[in-house]
Image 1 (tube, rainbow, N blue to C red):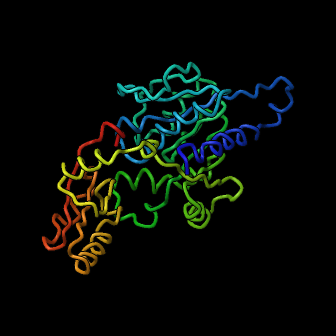
Image 2: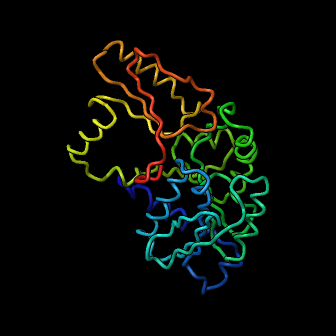
Image 3: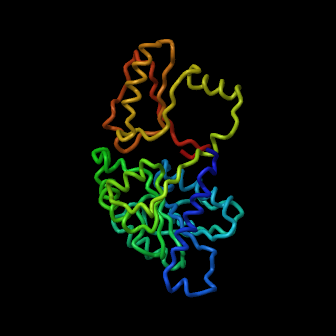
Length: 298
C-alpha cells in the first residue's frame, strides 16, 4: 500500500457524510458543496503515539488530494508545533483550551468548535464532542480496551470504556482501521453496519525513502547488531503483548543460537512497570529504550 493508499476513501467518507443533509438544507438549491471540516489534532501535544501519527499524516495527505474543502485544525493552545500543511491557506489553525481526556471534554469541546460553522468534525481519538457541528465522524482504531480492560489505567478506562458505546451511537459515521475492528464494533457495541467503513491505514512515508547499504551498515554498527534481528517499535506496555514474541524469539534462539534476535522499544508507557524488567541472558535479546525520534516524530 502506498503512502496515500486509503486517503481517497477518507475523502469519500467526508463527502458521503456531508450529503446526508437534513430536509431543510436540501431545499436550498444554492447549497454550497464546499465543506468546512474540523479535525481534532490536540493529542500530539500530549502523546506522540500511533494515533498522533495518524492525525499528522492524515492532514498532510488530505492537503495533497483535496483541493476543494476548507479545514480547521484544532490544536492545543499549549502546542508550539503547527500541523498545517506549509503554504496552504485552506488549512487554518485554531487553538483550544479544552484538554484531551478531561472529564468535561465532550461538552467543552462542543462549545469551543461551535463558532466556526463547521459542516463536519472528525475525532480521530474515538470520542466526539456532544455537538458543535451538524455531522461528526470518529475513528475507532481498535477495541482492545474492551477485550483487555485490565491493561488500562483507571483514567483510560473512564475515558474509553465508559464513553465508547455513546460515541458509536452518536457518530454520524465511523472509520474503522481494520475489518476486525469493524466486526468488534458490530458485535461488542451493536453498531449500525451502514455507518461503519473499514479504511485501512497506509505506511508512514518515511518508510518509502531509500536507504543506502552504507547507511544500513553504519546503523548496525552503531547499535552493535548483526544483519538478522527482529525490531519492535512501540510503547512498552502490557497491552502490546510483547512477552509473547519475546518467548517465541527465545525458542528460535535455542534452535538457531548463531542468530542475533533483538527487541527494541520506543519508550516506556504508563503500564510498563507490570512487564518483566529483564530478558534471559542466554536468549540473545537486547532491550533498548529510545527517546523520541526527531525524524519520524515517534
